[in-house]
Image (cartoon, rainbow, N blue to C red; front, side, top):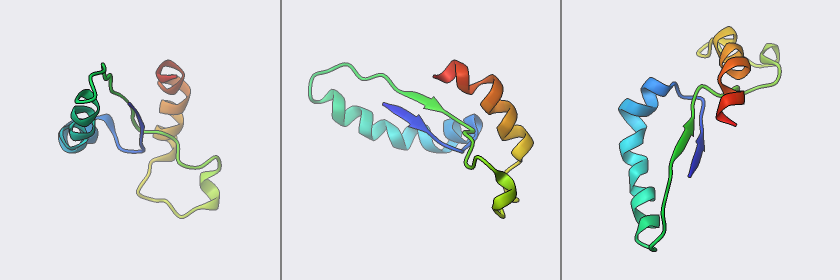
Length: 73
């Protein structure tokens, strides 16, 4: 399972990971191996100036996009 999300890794770990485990468990019931990978803090827009998105720190998102996302891929 690949999850891409704009949530931070901390938020994913604290608030989402356990809930998403349900999907993993369902797939395991089919008898296969399931691995989960979450790419967090993804870039939402190619041009943040076109959107009112003050809840996102564009410079942080850009840094994650440049430094972490290539590793995630």
